[in-house]
Image (cartoon, rainbow, N blue to C red; front, side, top):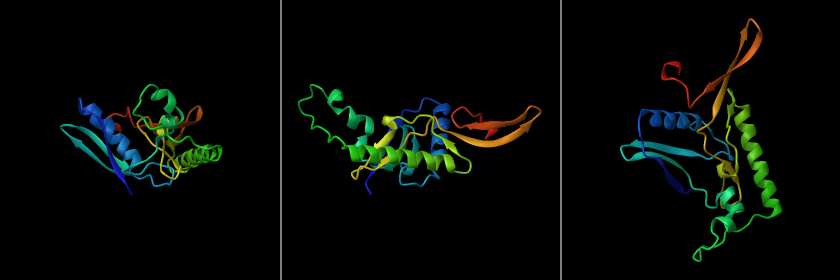
Length: 162
């Protein structure tokens, strides 16, 4: 397996580190063929880093829009476009990844599924990434007005509530 480390951002304060750690907390237990595998993370004075498996073809967005993104770049080697069969497989991979997230106990709601967050490996397998906006549906609770759904927000949750 090839590995890549991604510098996410330079840390500007405790809030950035907290958000980063919350994303890692969401990703850490996820093991599914259509979810990007988290291998490690690093918080250092130079920035925040996430270590994942390397997806050779990049994002589905870049694959589909390569000609527009690199227009006029003479040194660019065009990206292979997916066939209809490969596109349907990527669609199915995204659906399988979302089904996995939604059937976890408690379920994880991604909230940012788009072509930029679907990475593609050398075998045209799609994997969902970027769990920064994810939230976990924690419980259902009873109130005077009936059953309400309670959602746990990982990005904006106060430390005292965790």
